[in-house]
Length: 324
Image (tube, rainbow, N blue to C red; front, side, top):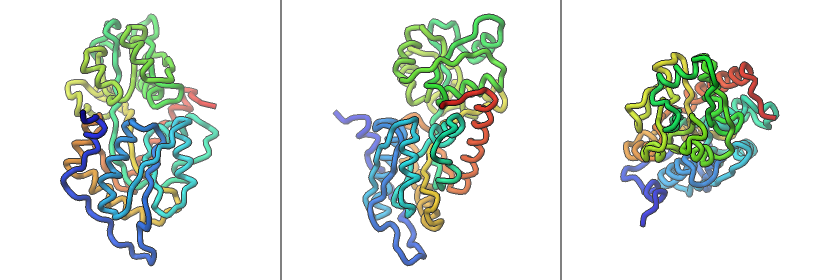
């Protein structure tokens, strides 16, 4: 039987444009390129990194290998990328958690994303979704807004650990819409899913890729997606921004290089990755793992990351969310 991961990693039929010849004396790349992934193997960022590696290797003319460095909410992998030689041969597949959320809630991180990393290209977004248990009595986004605004008990929601992307997505909704929601931390998504299915907790927020099977099996009711628009996988489910103007909590993934990497190498890598993700076959594969292709070159991605850091730091300070 062909595994889901093997299917996702099957080669696309079209070719990725090769890297242009650098103008500097030293050719690039000179050896294998590493993509560090700060999450475990089998996760969506890991699958995406392996798709990129397989498609990029023939175009770049060298092996492209994926190295998982999970731990500490992604900080271990990011720190490894920051310390790597700044020559373009070590890249980071970073995401909103360790790049934008963790710096907002953790005062003693050893890295500063804006100082220590250079954005190369935004690759994809992974929608977050609010789910209700079948026993909650919640069936629509309107139900959620009415219940959580009415006097009475505060609605609990499972949202990852304290300071996680899921936690802050709920906190942002509280701040934007004045809702009465209480975050219940869970260290594992599987435990939260089990409690939601059993009706022990009424609400949950998580990445769509993690809960899509629950929704398809009828074990949870999707109320709203957290991004600015509806998810392609759930076109009938509204975006929270449709009822709460200005609300946006988007999970995203992109490629970074150590800050001192030469600009001409970053520009070459950016152009190649933008072309790769623009391919129809690659976009279809990204969608198949519950994500949405979202292409930005290095400068645009860098501006976006700066805006994300400002947003989440402001929310963490206002809501008093901190991880020591």
